[in-house]
Image (cartoon, rainbow, N blue to C red; front, side):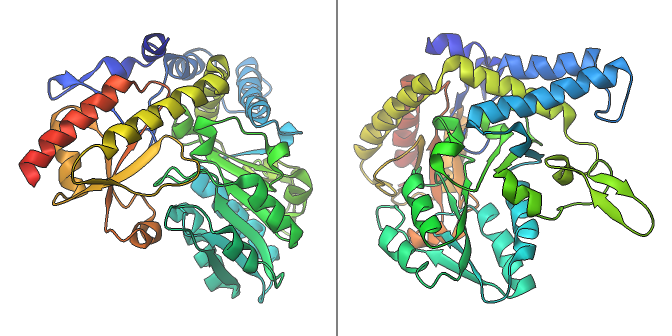
Length: 403
């Protein structure tokens, strides 16, 4: 079956430096299956027009495709109402939307709570909100293994000054899968709303926003085998209804004069201007691709890959895998004695092996781990054990050259 899946990704037949491509950087951005590319191509070739505002056939057909993608995402997340799906450019914009909109309803003396696991996209918007409104930013620590310290997390909520918790559902550095339901329960027990950054988790596991119980959930299309330029904010409708708009312009208004404006209903209140039309169509196709494979099969495949990779990496002399969380997704960061991660990535690239090296937009976490940078291998539905073997062979070769 894996070869059938790989055949759906044309780029995987490419060569790099005369060698077969081994792509182990899916956490940064996943490759795109044929159905995504074709869906966007067909929409561009045969029906493209601006949406919502046109009465002609092309506009109506494209509007239907765009709104169908919204319903596809709602189904994927088990959202109770498709109007709770807001299209954004990416997870970063989705989190900024919440920070600016819900954040504008916060008052000095209130706090936002994040964790040491966070990507910069879930740090910077809250720093900016802190500086703009004078709120407090609190940070829940992690254990040395890479899990959120739940006892410390709950203590930070006890004074009930935290209005919003914003934490990752899965770390892009350690692969830590946070105990989301418990994190949500604790937040709600202390009267805090909660946002889960699902940029990594939605790729690897079934997401049911109703079962999770969170107030907001975000993800980005390009990690879910979809196009760039399209992301998702899911929010409970009662919260989206009271939140002011994020951006102003066309489409997000109900009426406008030179004296005042009134806003459209959700989700359009948050989708100012011409949106990413073709990208939404591509995201809908990516959702269909995921549903065709099934999350049970995806999760089982990637759990087996991760276990296999950890076993092989642990056997390498001088190499240290960072973190040992209770539950880890298909993301593994590591360091090698005497070898800078950038050098490892450069040498592996010469062998056709693509990994990521650096701080992964998570500088505070990398520093907490006691290193300046890491190498990172991350897996997708198309990753094979043979590719992990190629990585191990490449690392052994790099070790001989660098140490």
